[in-house]
Amino acid sequence: MTCNDIIANLKGIFSPVVTPFNRRGGVDFGKFRAYVNRLTGAGLGGILVAGSTGEAPYLTEGERLRLVEVARRLVRPPEVLMVGTGLEGTGATLRLSREVIARGTDVVLVVTPNYYKSRMDGDALVAHYRAVAAGVRRPVLVYSIPQFTGIRMAPETIGRLSRLPNVAGLKESSGDLSFVLAVLKQVRPGFRVLVGSVSILLEALQAGAVGAVLSQANFVPELCAGVYESFRRGQLKTAQKLQQRLLPLARQIAVPYGVPGIKAAVDLCGFHAGPPRPPLLPVSAAVRREIAAVLRACRAGLDF
Image 1 (tube, rainbow, N blue to C red):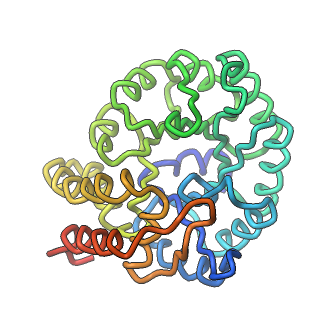
Image 2: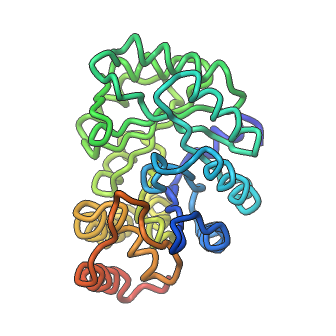
């Protein structure tokens, strides 16, 4: 796909795929291949490799590149392959972005640098993203997840970023609808805003967001895609009913248990996610039973 094709297809629901690990702690690329193959063709807009749900901070550069190579063979247009490449340094981020693009990545997702968070003002962030976007030949998405980074960009700063050449959009994962609405008022027309919380999905779509990156799409991809497709067709009541099914998966799995809970849900739905990588710990057997019950309730009566 050309860059224009990629940007046009940056819409819908994306799965931030987990990274399966084996008992020795290494990446299980065979299980990853089978898992991604299950997600392709499920109605999603594409997948995100090496995002927060994929335990990106714990992946080596070599592991990340190999995951991209495996995913690229399976993710076909119009589905979009996004890859997280944000590191603390601008030069390191640019180098990794070029490496994943050379292996077929459509879009690079660049999280805000945050170690020196007191110095990451609007000017520093604009300079960082300008340098990265100017140095690659694929669209760049800004990744805002203040609950992890401690960096809460002003809507005006995001407006400035939206006007940088090759910065195509934003993944906004705070879950704060008022903030998303403020951002949508600041960004240029055509800037692609994706949210990261199912609780605000429909309201964000109605306000002008183009989709979402949802951890729930790892284990109920058709249900997540169904919310977006129902909205796109103007079937708002159906979209609302489907969204209500998804809310317990966020409130009772993702929010309290994070990545370990999401990986348990993937396992319970028939795919190998394996344990999280230390220092994250797997959920207990009791929590796993709780997650299984939530999944059963969510899927009751559905034909997918």
